[in-house]
Image (cartoon, rainbow over all chains, first blue to last red; front, side, top):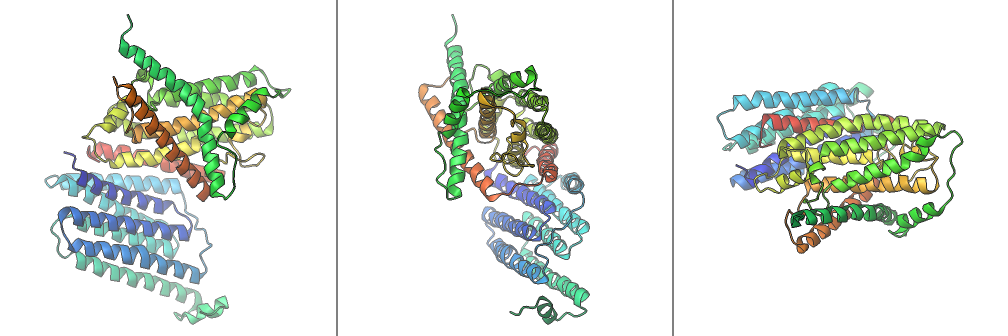
Length: 220
Length: 321
């Protein structure tokens, strides 16, 4: 059985895993943020495809949120923050790219190994999608563990959340998915802001952005 | 009495052999032309590589005092190994006479032999640059070859064979569909092809006398007809990799067995179109990318290895991925 629609769904889920792996490899913050935007774009395409295939209009909203919020707004905000923090030229030393990559492969293997037997009874398409989504989540976690920079950790977290949305849309008949997605997005925004406030406070002993202006000697 | 099919296969094989030899410099010229245009230069004509080859063939040969017969024999051997490899990849038709030997592993072995000879010849000249170039080339090769082998495994698991014409037929079959592992293998193949052909993120084909060069460092001591052979071999290798990727991942238009003249014409037109697309894509990619440090090449090729591993892994757990 080889249905074209299912193949496309698989392809998009596979692409998401691939972009997750690309993210692990990036060592410049701007490149990392760009890859994060691509990640969200692939997610939006994937969700929109599911909406089209299953004729589920509410999924289009999820796709629109992924596209507008995660692929455009958050990367822009992150880029601004990185620039404001003055770390846009910093090159993060990614320790042991090869080893991290191998660990990521092992995580993909693990998630397939765990997910496929557990969901043996159900529709083969959604179970493979869920297995791939789980590997996206695990790679996001790996990213958060291996990076030291707060921005990279936020990127890892965002990719993790993308994996959760992918899993949610892969499972058919989930009316609450829009709400869940919105809730998660708000949570992410909160975390993004929170981490940066902490970071600024750590550096300047205040959460006031004015301190940054004075420090950089520029205004507006 | 020789059967007609065999005559046809022989004709197709012969045409292909001379076609790749004739068109290889054209692809190089085309890539240089597009790159020049992207950099807002007029650039030389696409026929310039042919003129370069003719000029080199007429020029006097200067040999290093320290070199032995290896240095003189290597260019011919390298060029012929690469030519054989290029002739085995189905470009416009799959029913080539030697398509039974057009096996991915055989092609890797042919290219590996050519590379070994090239490294040996560069060492034989006895200059610092030659040794530096061959040590780097061997480092890159030792990373690219396992990656390529892994990618071949991924493709072979889908197609059930490593023979190129059979792979093309399997990819064309309607029940294959879109495969995640094939997509992963395609990206891996492109990375390996870039590294093996000494293109930009790994090596700069336009650089001379830079400390970062790899391929150019190895052919630095060559001149005259030997250099022409080396350049032709490099062009053939580029054409071979482009045709290989086209044959495995985009075999549409290939003339099938027992086809008429019109199918061959379609096959050639399709191949020409694919090569134009490949050349343009390569030129655009080279223009937007910066060369990476030599010590980052293992990371770059590690991605190809990883993609091959991932593709193979996906195929082992699920036949539909």
